[in-house]
Length: 383
Image (cartoon, rainbow, N blue to C red; front, side, top):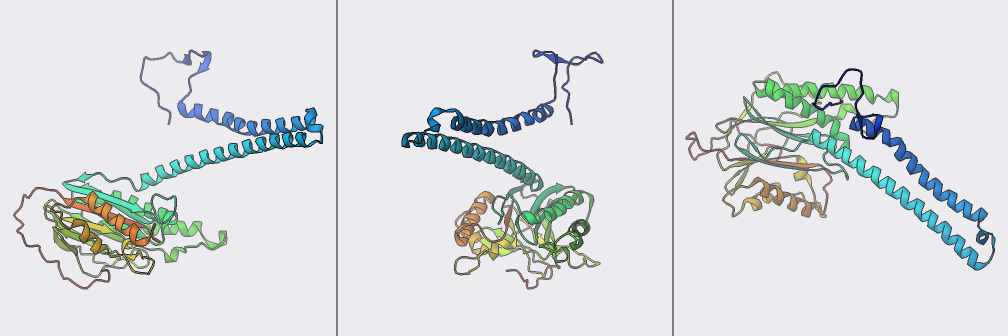
C-alpha cells in the first residue's frame, strides 16, 4: 500500500520533483528499494568478475607471470591466493547477509503468530515463554493466548502433534480461530466447537495439498494429526471454568502449596474424534488474590535427563515459590526454565511452553479462606 503524506494540495497532472532535478519523480520507499535491488545484484556479481579478470589479466599480460623461476611462481601463487580468498570472503559475507535477513523475516512472522502477551490483563499478571525443539525456530507446535472479553478473561493452551516448524501451520489455524471466537461465543463450549471446525478445515486443506498422487507421501499424514487444547475462563470474581481436550491440567500455586487445578479425566484431543453433543464446562473453584495458575505443555514433564528420568514440574514449582510470600510470574518462569534446561542438558527433545497467570486483583467479594472443591473430582492421566 502506498501512503501519501498530508500536505499542500498539488495541481492535477503535475508530478512532484525534488532537488535532484525536475525530471526525477519522488518514488515511494518500497519502490526505491525494489529499484536498488538490480543494482545490488549487479555489484554482487561484478566484484567476483572483476577479481577474476584481474587474475587472468595478470597471468596473460604480466611478464613476471610468464617466468618459470621460483620467485615468479611464488608471486603468481600469492596473487591467485589473494583473489581466491577475496572471492570466498565475498561469497561468505553475501550468504551471511541473506541468512540474517531470512532469520529476521522468519522471526517477525513467528512473532506475529505467537505475539507477546501483555504483562497485565484485567488484574492478572502474566508471564509466558516457549522453547522450540527446532534450532533456529522461535516457536513450534505449542500455542497460548490470553484475551480479555466481556465474558471474562479467556485463556488457551494447546499442543500440536509434532514439534518445530512443521507444526506452525496447525497452531496458526487454532490460534486464529480462538482470537475471533472468544469475543463471539458467550459460552466456553462454543469456543471449543469453533476451534474444532477451524482445525478440520485446516486439515482438509493440508490433505489436498499433500495428497500422495501429487508427489511423495507426507512425513506427517493428516489422519494422524491432533491438537490438545485447554480452555480456561476466569471471571471477574475469580471463578475458573475449564474445558480440557487431552491436555495436562495446570498447577495452582497458593502460597507455597503446589497442586493440580483439577483431576477430572480430559476429553479426547481435537482431530481424531468429534466432540460430544454436551460440553459442560468444569467448575474449578476460584483463583483467589495472590494465587497463580501455571499452564504448560507436556514437553515440560516429558523432558528427560541423561539417565532417562522425567523432569518433575511440580517439584520445580515448589522450589520456585519456596520462601517467597509473593508469587512473581517472571521469577517462577525463569526458575522453571533454568531447572528444565539443566535437567535436559540443553534443549529438550520436544517443544515446551509455560504460561503463568497471577491474580493481582483486590478482594471485592468475601470468598472466605477455604477453597471450593472441584466438581466431581476424578483421577487424571496427567500427573
